[in-house]
Image 1: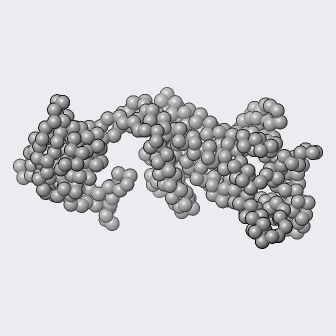
Image 2: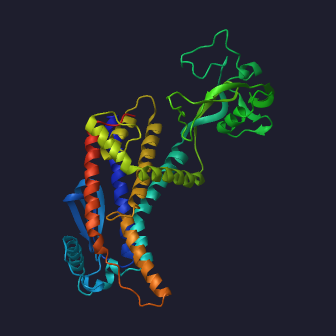
Image 3: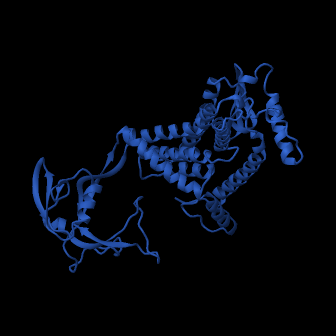
Length: 436
């Protein structure tokens, strides 16, 4: 049951994200006077629809996206000089122009999308991706501001009795040959809250860790809060080999696969974990960080798809960093919800963070400057606006609209490519899923 609840939460939020993405396109388009004939969630056969005003709203059978039909997306032939259709590419462009022109009702040419100014076109086309970014912001705010996540505090939870080598097994216990841990020797106890270290006020466990690791083997004063009173102690760290971690708290490995270590100050204490909430003002920074990380992943997408193809063909286990599709994300949602060792608050937080990252991925991916993605329409609008600005600066007549119908063959090619990748992802996620 928990598994199904997780999948259901994923499906509901995904459909809401798709729907709101299209709202991001539709609302500004209508405000600018463009007639929006269709607002659909999904593709394929229509399951349900209702016409309200001049727009038909509905759901289609394949819930893997959505669209709004903006009347007059492409300028008609006479607006772009009636180019001849000598090749199949030219015929595709011509047919796209004709189909777009047929949607324009008599007397409503001024309401066609192609008539909009460049800034208005940018607002319409960027409205969808920006909506995904807004959704991610709110989901992350719910998690970090509302629910909170477990994190280390400045209160000591554990005090080691000795210094155990970094390469020792996890089950290793203290022996008579191990040096005493400085924290225990200094009198630190479980429950102590570190107030200052070596004269520096301590606000977080991460700050305290940096201070300890940079101390070396010098004796330093430590102030702790114990039973409501401040206690002054002196601790002399030992220089020990400890693992190196990256920015995501993952162990850094050597070329031979062994954990990389470095010599740092060590006193042998561990933090108490508590649910911590953040200020709403910290969320924009988190969104920006996740967006940058997602953009880096999207930049390597071609190589990731190649790795996916190889693992699918050869049946080798997929790496945890492998790209996943809707099926894979749905499985993750079910696995998170059915985990027995965490409460539902943390399960919900995990689900919402995953959906926030999905919305950021949709934001970044849709900005790729290729049709039929939103970024392709943005690029076309910028090209059109750039031509007009150049003509204005050079004192030349204002050029007509850019013949964006010429991009239709590219749009079809990209659509087929994305469809193929999507089918590969569905197959791989079913027969060779990523294990988390």
